[in-house]
Length: 250
Ligand code: SAM
Image (cartoon, rainbow, N blue to C red):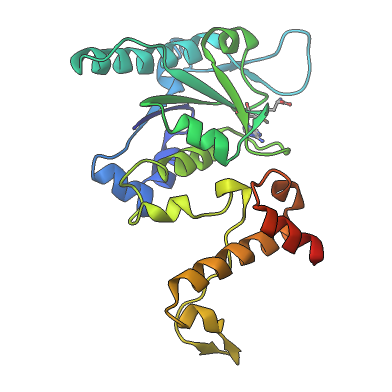
């Protein structure tokens, strides 16, 4: 999977994504994470990329042209690679990180993980001139209802989440399938050695070696935890009739 991140702060993004699981997956060629410095496309004397907004208002706005040229550079690279691989030409999806976008979630990550190439556009200051957004952006995504100084952290959040879904990135692919939000359930509690810590015992069933009972316990714990912490999710979860009755009784 190939990520292109258009940003004014490429070091922040590459340093953040170059470590641990994502960094290792990139090292193994499962992911390619390229940053494109928007400032490199500011063809003026001071290499400035921002200007005052028309009509007044606080702060500065990123100008359309450098953003457009940075996008063109990434899109051209994608086009060339597709041609070399004999793949069909396709306009890449361009995600603009914005507090005004649809709120990111696991379903969205799964859908985006099907793409081969993704371009992320990080805003800064007061945002980006609307005209270039209209021209190049296919998806506007927020990571939550709060305002950050830039799109770099949101882009890193999204790249990390999507990368975990790329086959081979996680040590054990099964772990992505049984995690929170899968089937609209939160994950059950987990325990490791020792069996007793600060007087607290690991639940007996997990030591029993009885596979079916362990699975049943995990499913029940997931349902219980989701009911307590995220009842909104549980409403969208496909519970069996038996599970529904069990939950009603509680
Ligand atoms: N003036 C904009 C508004 O009110 O909608 C906010 C601009 S914000 C200070 C600067 C940049 O940070 C945005 O262009 C966007 O790329 C990024 N950003 C801020 N909060 C975000 C969020 N919750 N999710 C995704 N991106 C965000």
